[in-house]
Image 1 (cartoon, each protein chain N blue to C red):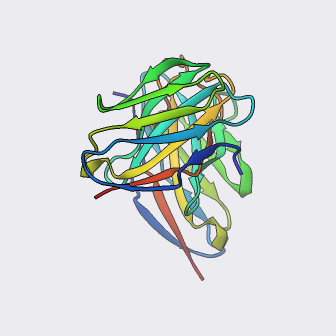
Image 2 (cartoon, rainbow over the protein chains, first blue to last red):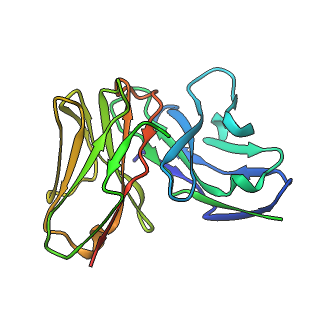
Image 3 (cartoon, each protein chain N blue to C red):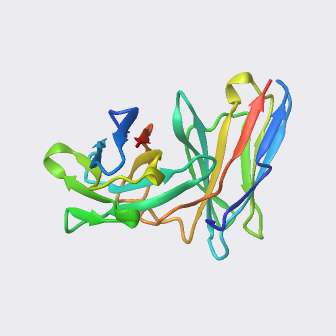
Length: 114
Length: 114
């Protein structure tokens, strides 16, 4: 079955430190991949997406993600975390055929400490 | 602001009751999605509509139904409510419902079944 796994439920980083959130997918063929962020009391907002081509994609708010086919991974990174980055982050995937809906991972909650 | 409006923001009701959640998509978007977010299940896709027609169905219970009206707003009807239906229900919209499209999420309706 198609699935998206985010191994880390909760991560705490210090402000200014680097961040990497992990995401693995299980699909027959490479899906379209997305990262969304959910701030408290808000809906989800798209950070970035990968369809094909350059495996390093840039997104909003200084985030980037790297697609690694060999590892079925699409990890999200940020060089220097700000306190406002504290939120829930969701990795999502959809089959390139478009016949299946967007599937979300269970999310990783990011806490930022001073 | 995503442009997607969900009402009400909060809903408290009793078991066995029926409720209706409403969603107005972003101006120009033809496709509407409903998702249920709970702590144990994460974000689960319920159903998708495109221009008034059902396009995809996910893990939606038979007690739940939805529709998209000619003005493109959508309603999610939940009946015979159970305690386990307590969750955050999100509506999202996109321009044409294609797999690669960015979804714009509303801020959700928090349903509490007591």
